[in-house]
Length: 174
Image (tube, rainbow, N blue to C red; front, side, top):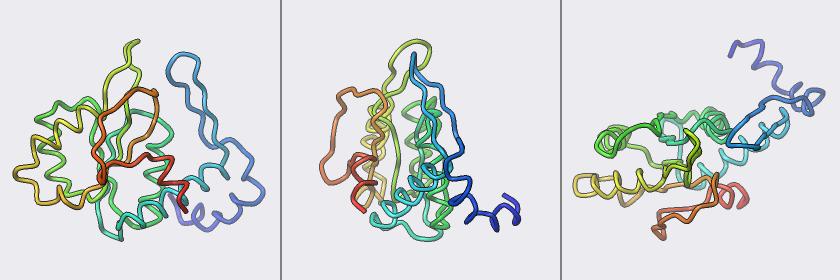
């Protein structure tokens, strides 16, 4: 982002707020469009949610999401807090995720319940859960981590009370 774009940020909230900023074509028949105003509002609410979870400038937030609008929103939210977004691709295996979550030292991990790809619904959170469980014996951060779960496929997911929180509920808490 160039400085001239950053200087124009107030204009986006004004005259450009209703212009489409993001169009997402997902699983069969699903189309989402977010205006500049909607995108900025969700990024602000996500930043506030991350701050309530203890994320501060310089902290890492691990994003384990398919290509969905919430991935962009998480990136913008991290930018608002000067937090570091680290990507955990959904294609990683459990052993790879164990290593990457340990390396990331992230206070908050953002994942999805599941995702559509190759014409099927695939687990996303379940893979992360396995990696977190496998890495728990040597992971010093396991006590302070929060997992925010984006509801993309409305599938049942395992839940660890105190650690797991729904993304939409965390954003609505403001």
